[in-house]
Image (cartoon, rainbow, N blue to C red; front, side):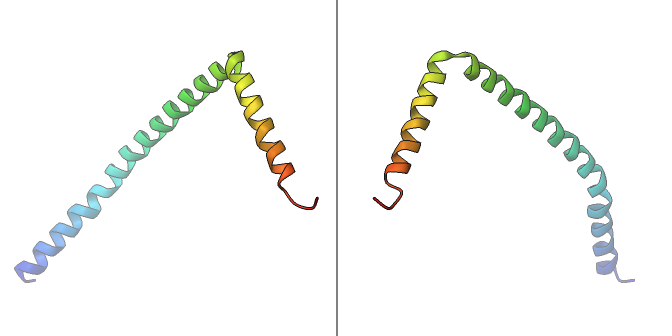
Length: 76
């Protein structure tokens, strides 16, 4: 085998040999990121659900949105 082929083979083995370990660590990091993201979303939703000012603002925004959509939605 020529030295170029040996070098190419060594580089490929190094790249493909390191993929499984790297992928395993990345999978664990991604799972942790999703857990942290889910916890943050649950906390934000919980705070918003208990805050009456935010509830009133959201209710009025959505009712205005749906009434505007129904008024401009077609056949009068």
